[in-house]
Length: 186
Image (tube, rainbow, N blue to C red; front, side, top):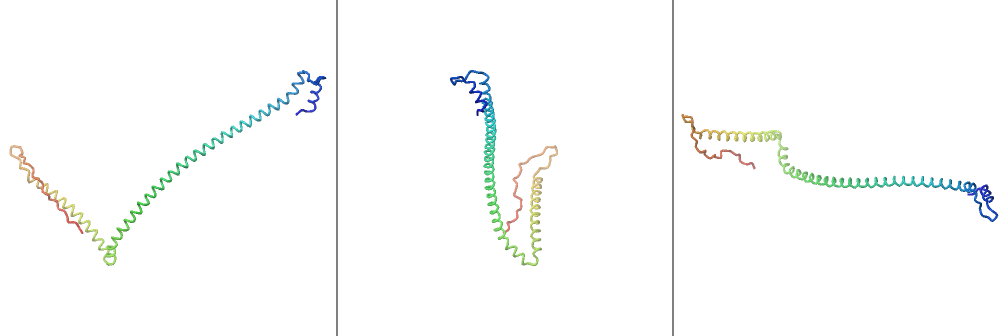
């Protein structure tokens, strides 16, 4: 680290006994390059420390981001598992409904076969629909007749108004069951 000129100056400032002489000019010249080199190395080390701290902070942020991403992926995984379970339940219900429809369809195939072999199958289907609508209309008419009979019965039981303007009230007679119901089909 010492250059030859520094070594020469250092040897000239020594006394006969080999001890350095107290010369302030010689000491400042001799120590200044070492102090500068030391200061430069301190600056370099401090710069490296700052860079490493920044890199460390970046790595900590990256680790935190990875942890939060892992948490999000775990939550997403749980949601997917719930969705899968729900879809499996829905699929089981649909399979049960499908099986039920197949059983009902098998029960109705005998009617289909009966109608399919007949050349008047369209006529049979049309007549069946018309019969159903006529039954509904008949039920409505029966309901209407029953309500009209009830109103007629009420009108008959009302006393005629007295000439002086007061009405005589009689206790109402109990209603008789006048509704007509169709017998059940086999």
